[in-house]
Image: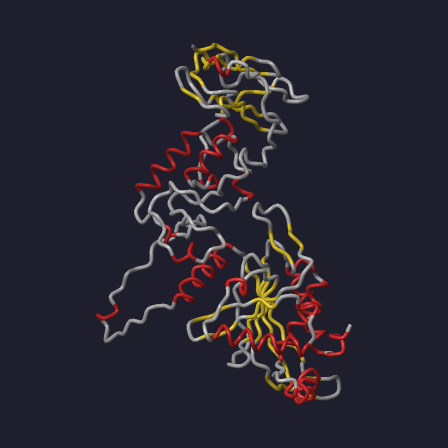
Length: 451
């Protein structure tokens, strides 16, 4: 037997006469427990009134624009007798407009782009798998501040997430340009019929780029094909994502390391007796930790919802290693607790393992900051790509002797080119310049490493 119940507006605190902005069901609809029935919006919050139990909608007692308060009857529901004891007015607390109705729902991607594979975000396999040519698969659970603040009800945001639609690209047709359910559906229809609607046009990041041309290069001369290594394919996907999704700023500088190099050479013999090779990289690791301590925003990660900065109290630094099959970035753990000799030994061991292909996944995890040194090869300044979820990376070129004015005359000094890339959402230009200046001061005076 079915039981007819009245669904009422739940306890919504001090709010009274809140307008109804959406009616999400119609007479005859079958609903499940917790399905949204109507959406209310005050000056401070937007919330859905969900169904207390499953059943069939028999009568709707209000319309868009009506004002309601606690206890106002929303509709009548024909529910199963076994569920009749559930009190209709017991509902969740109001949800602030900046918070999604379901924070566990995956984040949006552009409807015109394919969703990410089903592998977890931390899995390299998620990069190498081909994307699906339709917007009906959910993206990894990465919230987006602009999405959660879109002018849409929680139910519409939830619906958009399920379809993988980026609400920031949807034009609303409701009052005050509010995004309605029909607007999301129309957007999906247009996206599905658009030419070249695939992840290649934007990697799920909201870009609508034309696909790359498939050129037959053999028409112009002899060619030879060489497949990318597995590492190149995996890292390439991550680098592409990081370059597109992070607003990079790169700070270039030159540091006088004349005294540091003299000290390194003096200690090389002692290091050799310990069975290690003391390189500039160990000094860069120690100097970076001092700079990270001084500027904790660099030793941080942006939260998934873009609302908080996660400040790390440990110091794990990634070091880019050039291997025969591509670039890998092993992480040296607890750099702050290790001396130069110990770091030199660990760097040698890790680099050898990487080049021999003996890579353990844990070697590549937990980094706070990265260093990419090309000094052994050559070059000056470049733009290193941030290794997300880190917020900064240091690029190091080849040190060159240059004439430097000391106030009286030009003197030969060994100058080291540095290129510091940082996430502009977290770090502004002034802070980036201060970090670079502080790091340069530490490297210029090796005595600071003992502090």
